[in-house]
Length: 245
Image (cartoon, rainbow, N blue to C red; front, top):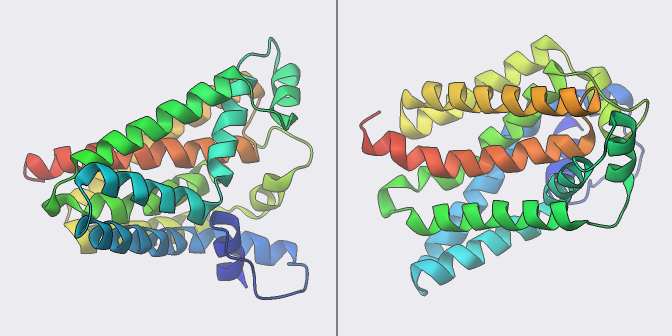
């Protein structure tokens, strides 16, 4: 059940069970986040490989990014947009109120546009020998969510992310971290340790910023953490490979 909950939360694939998941089942899904991320990465790799045999690098990157957005249902992009809009508020309460608004403001549009532009540019620049970035970006992005859920307080009294936060434990974080690290080392060698350290630093920095502005994190900021870290992986992976890690 935990795997299906993670799949439902990170993708548009519905859970094949009718019953309402229990709190412990929602909490158990955290350890499966990196596994679902790896499945998404595999889909992106196959899409990029197949499209690349037919189209130019620019068109291939565009269509692969489209697949990426569609498979996630743009849920985490929406979280990024809401998080950016919330920065316009003058107090933590006002920022949280703005983030609940279903309308997207100027800050949200700019945030989504810049994030997609960075992802697109990074994907266009990927060469045949650093395809690992496409596989690892969703893995590390999903793991960064587990880290942020575990490490930072929840800003609202209730919300979608509250169920994950209540069940988050150090043990679940350790298991998710080991799965993530194993996938990275298996795919690209020991530089996966370096990448995990980079993503950890980025996640803690983003989480600390949102905590200072909101008093904690929310489901929207979890999505923002995921999106930003995916872009970081796309940018950093070719750099690490080029210098011989």
